[in-house]
Image 1 (spheres, rainbow, N blue to C red):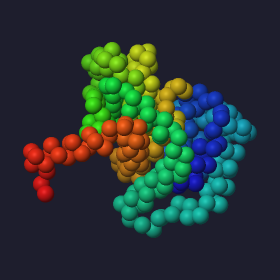
Image 2: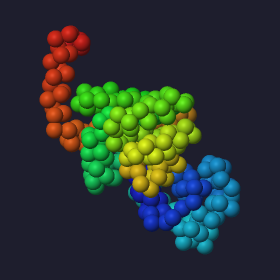
Image 3: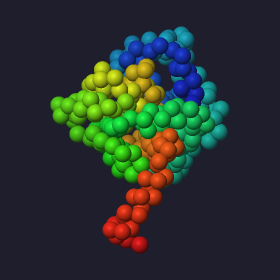
Length: 278
């Protein structure tokens, strides 16, 4: 799956895609193992677009049509070692194996640490630091916020939608925030797009941890960090986005000169109060 995802990303790299075409690309990357075997009708249904949009997507990538794109994907799948591996395993095992492959994809991406390091510096320099995550992404935002608060002086987790969300983003900007971290996972709530638009208008730099480089909430000026979700079970699994969030947290700690001191102070206070067992 790692090679399939990388191949798909390389195919779309450098092409200007319409929103519908971005949805198609996003769908193909998420279902990299199945992509070579999807018909244009199946792909259109999965991406929520029309069948002609799938054809135009293939042409935009330089192919004569969707059949030519699918042939290229199939040829790559046949060459890939271990293609469609784990077919004899129990579905639960297959889901775990697929998640391991998602982590391998993430590991390959992190061979270039530049984007994560840049994002870490932006977050470290933001006072306060708003962290946004709604619905499926709320747990990611809360987890990041819990640990970030141990080293960052002012972390504000935004995990509930509604008009108050926009108020809180504007309040953070007025208080001096320079950046906002967003966790964006499928299915992407419309409120996230609106919230990020408000953040950008307020002058905040947006760092987004998303499931794909084609996430519908991202804009060209954002720092976008992608980590695929697993789709083998009834509900998406997010081991890779969670891991990327922890890596980003580490990059932020590296950019905070007093991070280690704050951690030691927290540990000392926790021990005095007997917060933890053992």
